[in-house]
Image 1: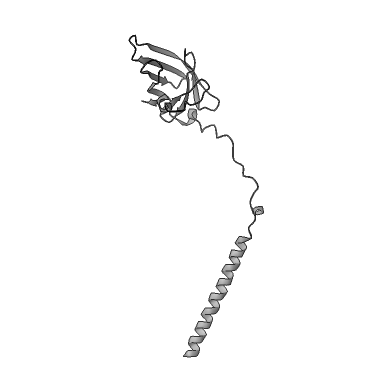
Image 2: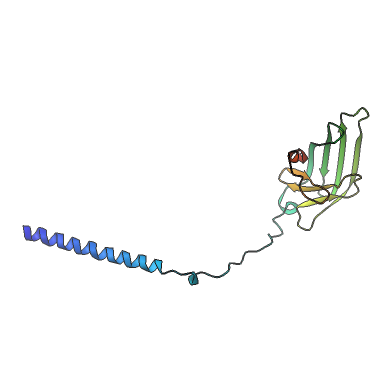
Length: 160
């Protein structure tokens, strides 16, 4: 009986020791991976596809409203309607002035070459540049950049 038990233990020991060495050999093969096994460069397109812009990807037409900051009044109530045919209607109301100044402009707008921002043509006294986002647009400065700082959130018009 002891001989049979000894034989079984010996066979088990041999199996464990053989499988351990083959696992170690597999790990050694993995550790021999060098940088030469990988490509030097990966081609990544620098420009997104033309479909990945506000003009083509978003439901941008509609009416946007908000109150923009004003230096000498309580705010400029603003409504901008963008139409699919490339026309706009722009209404402003200067709040808190005795002789409230309401203005309305209509005209055409154009997209920038990236299809992210629009320029309202024919506006007086305003750069008329907006970056179009999902259900909102950002009023841009005269250089076409988003306004930053503490008041940045006040330069957003929300889609109605």
